[in-house]
Amino acid sequence: MSDCLNVEIRELLPEYLSGTLSARRRQEVRDHVTACDDCARELALLQLVREAYAEATPAVNVGAIVAALPRRASRPATRSWRHSHAFQIAAAVSFIALGGMSLAVARSFFNGNPVSAPIDTVIAANTTAVSGDMPAISFAGGVSDLGDEDLEALLSALESIEALPVTEPAEVPLSGTGRQGS
Amino acid sequence: MVEDLTGRDDSLDSTLIQRWKEGDERAATALVERHASALARYIGSLGERDSAEEVVQDTFVRAFSSLETFRGDSSLRTWLFTIARRLVVDRRRALRRRRDVGSLEDVDAATEYTALDGLIASEAKRKVWGAVGKLSPTQREVFLLRVNDGLSYKEIAEVAGTTEGAARVHYHNALRTVKENLNE
Image (cartoon, rainbow over all chains, first blue to last red; front, top):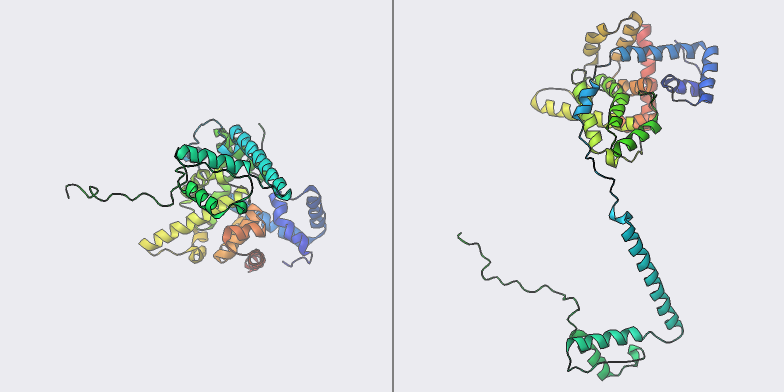
């Protein structure tokens, strides 16, 4: 059995038998095989292989296989938290708020008028909340406008704000934590 | 519903997988019907005829356990074949630890194919069966994946853990050897 020199068509013979070729390709192969004895013989050989193996295919019980499959939990179609409406709305609001704040900061910066109101508000609110006898700090310009005393007062006020996160965990008392009864 | 349940229609597989994900258990039956025979034939060609049904079942159980995460980068059939092959390799390895059983490369094809050619009715098919049986295990696997299932060289490389070029060479060498065996 000799081989046809049309390698392109020969390469398509298995797909032709499997029925996975496009209609145009299928017709091309059919036209060639009709005129080429070598390819006709090769196609017949491949078809015999398919038929021989189809006859010898081990039997399988589809019902038993399906019965052994993991049951799919019938649950309502849940959406992940990323796709929930609440999350999407919150994300949109946060995005707009952040954008607005960024714009305000940028505008203040380029106008040479650093934002002071938020700092004033935060410092004043925290100092009054933390200790009533501590003088409230207020400044209208940037931090660079503050004198040494004002800066020290600002730093001490910041340190006294309890809402700031502690940098280290509180020490865990070791007494009484040993194993009992051992 | 009129569907070709055994063809290689990847879009139909995608539709059935989607239906199964939405809770349609009949889609699972359709998927098994579409691919079980091809899997059994492939597993048989690897020399696991006696345990083919068990391996097919294990393959589907594995596949359905992770079908939620199946991305469809390859076709479902290619993916199933890959799982089946891995299961066969694992079984061989486990058996080899217990007693002396060969790897996929060591299957005594000649003995197995001589014993089974009684299943084939016609003389011509028996001859072809015998000629394919004389191929090396790798050549036989590649040749049958291409001829029986119409897998592309890329898909064969994925299943058999080789390269596209190597799959092409194996196929053509196998075809030439089968022709020579038939002419002897």
